[in-house]
Length: 167
Image (cartoon, rainbow, N blue to C red; front, side):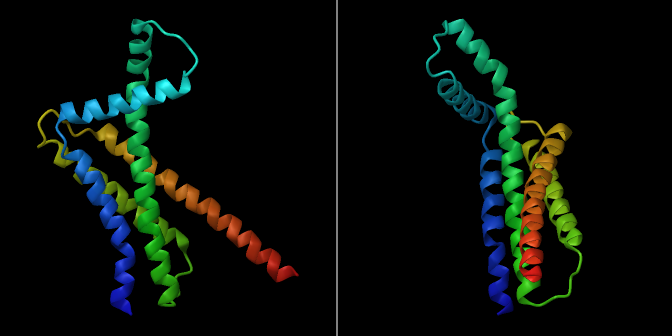
């Protein structure tokens, strides 16, 4: 049974491999992919608006960095969720008396930060890429956002449990 519980971490491990896959792309490939995504976003948002080519390119350039950073945050928000859920499953299934969700939140956050640091170090060795402390910060904020989302879910679930108890 215990061995099966370790399998609950597989989605998080696969997600880490997914992040690593993007990090191994050279600078040109990475920039080209995010630029294409930014163009698609601009096309969707500004569907009915006519732009000159210069205006369009200026808008894409203006949004390119925020789109890249949002992607970093989303990757790590998802990673935090995929790490946290197996911890909680293991706690409940093994009936471990862990009265502090904060411990699981903290461990999950630390794992996300450490993975972000190793990801940025890895990028130092990829042609055309750089490892930046600011990206670690953005990734960490993304992990924190994922955990805050889970905290909101916990709060809602706790309210329902309290309401059921009052009936």
